[in-house]
Amino acid sequence: MLLEQLSGNLLQGLVLGAVYGMATMGLSLIFGVLQVVNVGHGAFIMVGSFTALMMFQGMGIPPVFAIPVAMLIGMGLGMLFYYGAMKPLVSPSGSGIRKMSPKVLGMAGGGFVGMLILMWIGSGLFKLNVAIYIFVGIIFIYGFFLYIYGGRRQDKAPELATLLVTFSLGVILEEVVKQIFTSESRGYNWDIGKLDVGITVFPYPKLLAAFGSMMIAILLYLWFKKTRAGMAMRSVVEDDVGARVCGVDVDWQYALSFSLGIGLTVTSGVLLTMFIPVGINPYMGGPYTLKAFVIAVLGGLASPYAAFFGGVVFGLLENGSYTLFANIPGVEPFAMTRFFSFVMLLVILLIRPTGLLRAK
Image (cartoon, rainbow, N blue to C red; front, side, top):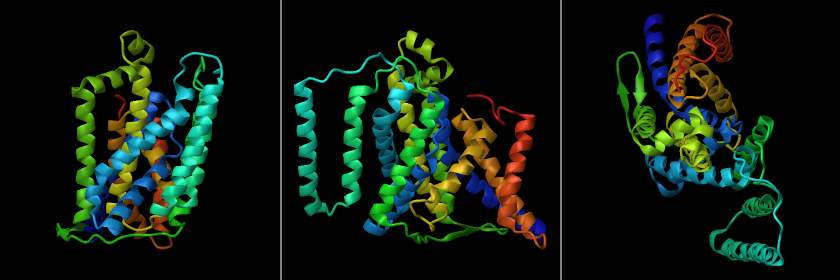
């Protein structure tokens, strides 16, 4: 009986692990190329979850069709946040503070007033939330001061600075989503049937989530290995100075990798809701951030493929240990599962400090 239950849960863990791996690939990609630890990782997963929720409940579109939409939203957010916040910290390209002419000041002031007028008109058409006003205003003012004082450094900023920036971006996203949707937990029910394999039952949305995760991982692998753009990005990972000497536009590769990493992370939010379609709220990303760090270190922090492999291992450990702890009297299985996962992480790191897979 116990063996059958363990086998069933391990199969469930295999499917869940594929989604975990996909959810960590963006984190590893950003760290591998930019050496930036995205502490706001979970907030971007939350954005993907709300994308799936809104498309399903608001427009009746199945979550699987929200995957490309989430990718586009994530890549857009990635580009916005890279050029608005990350670029001055990770991509040095000169020095000095820009001198502002009256013409530039006038254009900036006019643009700001024009933006407020457009949003005032839009509020009557689309019922925009006040949080959107505040968010866009902050982005505009920040971008203006960034144009004057930032983006022209000679040296990269300390790693702590990028850590704080990604943390801030995550908090901003959470609060904006909270203002729009409130902090209430939501969910949806997409019932399209189940597959009974004897020792366990798989709802089809879970299988689609795992299949989608594997397909995205394969496409990313082919993009890295078979395209010139992928080769250029790999050259930046190996040696950004050498890549620049060879004619690679390193600044663009930084922007593309950050955008692609955020796109993958937001997309993983859609896939996670197909596996767990409840508990969608602005602060749902915290546990996923913690798991993503464990998985990334477990597989190999700088490699997206290693992260995917680490996710599968983590899913098996999580589900397998839960089954064992649930059969021990007086033991709380959820808490012990987390404890066991971190113990296994420490053991693996003692044996292989660079993670289970070392290749980038």
